[in-house]
Amino acid sequence: MDGIYDVTTLTANQYMVVSGFLSMGFAAMLATTIYLYLAQARVLPKYRQAIVISGTVTLIALYHYWRIYDSFKSAHAGGEVFNEAYRYVDWLLTVPLLLMETIAVLALPAANRKSLTARLVPASAAMIILGYPGEVSADMATKAIWGGLSSIPFLYILYVLFVELTKTLESQPSEVAATVKRLRLLLIATWGVYPISYLLPLIGVDGGNAFVGRQVGYTVADILAKCLFGLTIYKIARLKSAADDSSYASSEGVH
Image 1 (cartoon, rainbow, N blue to C red):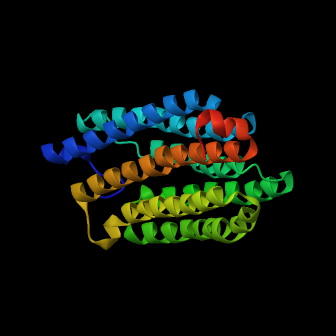
Image 2 (cartoon, rainbow, N blue to C red; image 1 turned 120 degrees about the horizontal axis):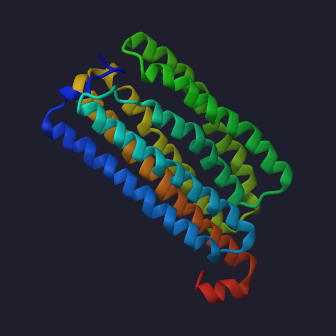
């Protein structure tokens, strides 16, 4: 039954695939966390908050990947049920922070920051909370209902990112604006992997294949949405720093 899948029934190959991807997720979060915390000193002070938030996102994910991997090993050994809730706790904390770091790196006027934060953070939390009941349910109708409800705040976030945030890009340097536009596409593309993985049982993939597909999909999406996203935030911070201070641009070789 999906949602409460017995991982002791995985084949040796399926176990190795899941184990390998979870290990890769842990390593990617660890490396990115170290890099971002060390690199934040290389941007102007006003942009360091965004880099610290990015590093905090990967640090939180690092901890949860350790817990997920430990739970997976224990469940496979027959000691406990695999706890998918670790991912949702991780997302509940990190998804709002991902949106906050995007807002922080742009150094927008206070009114704009407050407005975007007040809309995006609650919507992202609602998206995660509404998705969890369907994640752990074995009933396909329940999965579809909660998945549909979770899509409502997801679509609202898309609207804010692509319509409202676009208005703020007019005041940004051209290269920064172009990078932010690519950043939004990256965010949406990687977020799109999550519902695909979530919906695997609804499209005929079941049992061990659904479990493996979900874990692989979630892990790849996490690496892209947190590690690559965080490194792109760092690039934007460097571009903004160079635009604000010519001496920084010269010393850092940013053009």
